[in-house]
Image 1: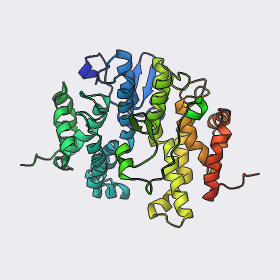
Image 2: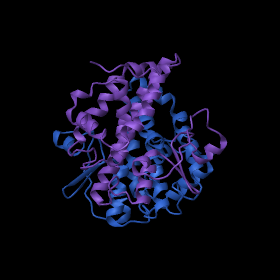
Image 3: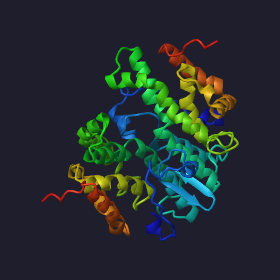
Image 4: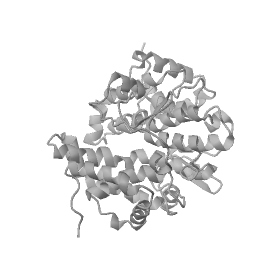
Length: 203
Length: 203
């Protein structure tokens, strides 16, 4: 989002658990990324970081200030954790661990359940799309950024058939028009290729 | 929070899955509570509902408008889902199901892991308390309301020794001073007693 909005920032790549130092744990006691450092102000939780940056910089397009529009964005951002977000811990990470021959029994079970896990979220997402973007807006908000980061990696890995969900598929096409989409996606693509999780696209 | 703030509201008790009608699914496609209906505006996700009500009614004490203070509240509210919140699906619900002789193998495993599950959250919570309340505030905010609802039920059920965590224990004592605490807790107490999950306090 900072790239799209053209603000200056420095990205510090931190890979838990190996990069989790005592100094990092002071910034985020969870020992996880992302963490934002803005002068002497430090915070964690990606969805809260996005709303902070939007409020600080007056980005009303991505985080509306109108009461009900904002409520719908927050509704999505909270829903996200127990649904779309699971694409990372319950799909991506187990697939990486399986590829490395290091998956736990629970992770192997998650690999088996990939399609069911994703379908649970996307079934509900399909109902959330009453407008072109996920939090009932006509342009992408932080809710779409949060959601798309999860869905995009599933699409690249080709582990789910999104075409059965027309509203979600059309939204995923629309999200590809967000400025810098391809440049930002290139890094993810490269990572998934390195992990052998980027199959050739289906014909 | 609506009780504490003295706004008029009607509480409609809805018990998923038995009360989940097609009309209810239109209000919340997840088929879960809570759901807020405010005129023709309908929303779900408890943490988002609290921030909506606070913004609508100008309750700056429970949801500060100052940028960084608000960011810390939002940071907690998002962290909540993957930590303190687990007290309900991973502790309370499995204990209820076990009591009813209906626990799945996964739920029986959760019952075994009760202390570990709670400790994971409370270990981090203890580090979040740099001020008297959880989101670095000097008075209770919606972050404390969200967190206390989870911790309070664990305290009533007596499934965890909070005394090992001085900052968290002191905060739990402070939360008992929130207006209407005892009246609101009475309903929970009654429910847990009905479920045989309210043991006599330890001497």
